[in-house]
Image (cartoon, rainbow, N blue to C red):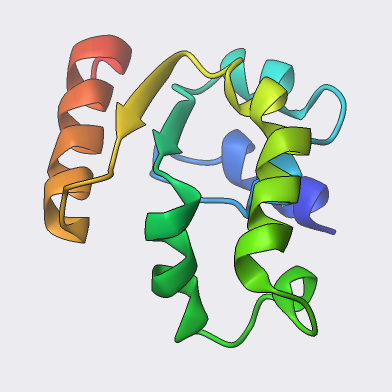
Length: 113
């Protein structure tokens, strides 16, 4: 379902789309997106990401387990796919607003927005 939604989003007007981490790990997903979009890996440490996601309570893959251990496992499996992105943005010490501004700057300089 997520892959289909991403395909629809990529076919539309230029926009910022933030899919779940599992989307990027689907074979061919990154490559398909790269053909028509700027793909940015928003990189952060598990120790930083875990508290950010803990308040959401909507991440089924993190339910019922130690979220930090599960996130480490998922990152180990998925990071090879994430590293295929056009560029990476270290979000470790940035606010959401700072990350958003940087994504816009990258899009403007790389994709001509």
